[in-house]
Length: 296
Image (cartoon, rainbow, N blue to C red; front, side):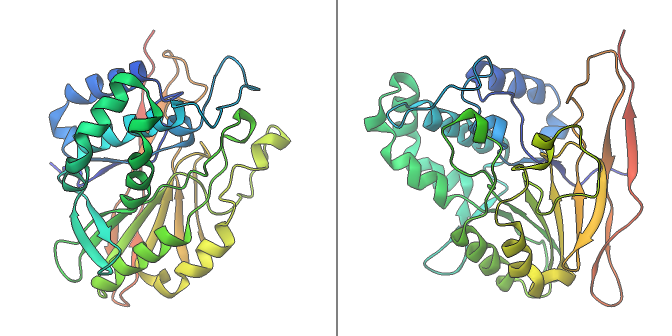
């Protein structure tokens, strides 16, 4: 009776970016086409930066193709799922350009050769491609509508102990600002994987509190302050229920539906509804918590 407009997956579709995990994910999504056509996703640190789950001290050597293969899998999945619905930013013109599918089209042959051989010689152009497709933008359907900006907040790391680091580049932020400037009356959901601030919540261990927030979170919040009335930040990564505000912007942390949960345990996700107030500010209405029962 009230269909969802968007299903937002804020990263960590896989545990370690393996091709078999992506196959499982895409198989699951393909069984629900009405959900798939509403889904948008961004990469998480598990999709990109997990080197070896069995050996936390293992390095991704600079000569290893594994990091770029993980990026290739993310690009392929995003191209398949949302390639026709999101646009990339044309940096030269300072406005939205073509779709993600159009941006990937000239590189499909190289992507296929690299996937088949794993030879670094076929992956050089993919580094620039990865940088250029973020942020991805769902444009508002009217001048004062609601748009969505999808960011990559993962810092490039090659060591398992630093795989959770997050950072938003200046280039991505400028592209975000260009997209918002193109629709000066619109409101925006800005989606990123990492949280921009630490939360007033007791942690189980020091490692849970240190090094998982966005490294340049304070800078990013200050940069967005001119847009604060028209923006809501939504993220994953932290695995906790939390809704708050920083710099005048609502911030919504998505709980993980699977973290430390076995099949017999109940899980949850949220349905969020937004409205624009008479003052033009984007507002979050009362969230609806959906509990999913466990299976014996």
